[in-house]
Amino acid sequence: MKKSIYQFIFQKLMGWEIKANSISEIKKCIVICVPHTSWHDFYLGVFSRGILQEEFNFVAKKELFIFPLGIYFKWMGGAPLNRQKNENKVDSIAKIFAEKEVFRLAIAPEGTRKKVSEWKTGFYYIALKANVPIIPVVFDHGNKILTYGKPFYPTGNIKEDLKILEQNYIDVLGRIPEYSFTPKKQ
Image (cartoon, rainbow, N blue to C red):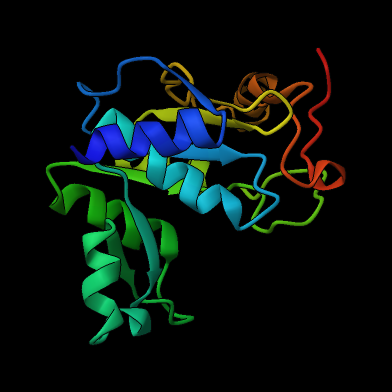
């Protein structure tokens, strides 16, 4: 029932389409969501996970997980993260992967909704440390298509791996086009 409601809103009312490779068999991964130019991307992601009927997760500072909002954030797939200066975030998030049976961590590698010329690389190092693939997700507002790409397994050569991942986002427009990430064409 809930899936039908999500599909009706997402596809019929909003005019969006989902293109997805099967991710059901991938229980742990980093999901990079690009371009992230607006808060609207959040509910598009929520609709898509409801339609796909898959669990997706996020991390946020542990202070957000106190009552009453903590219940909602955990229900939405959130995991609390200790953001103290002496704690390595990559190690902390890799530990969450080790503790969970299913953990698909959604991250916006731009690190902001504003225009950036390059991504923050924490997601990459988390994937290496946790030994999980990276799934590129494309929020193409220009064509109203949300695409879940094929899993990419990082090699440890970050420069070359980022070039490969960025190719998923060529000519893709975010909700605010001027903030869209523009990868270098190969």
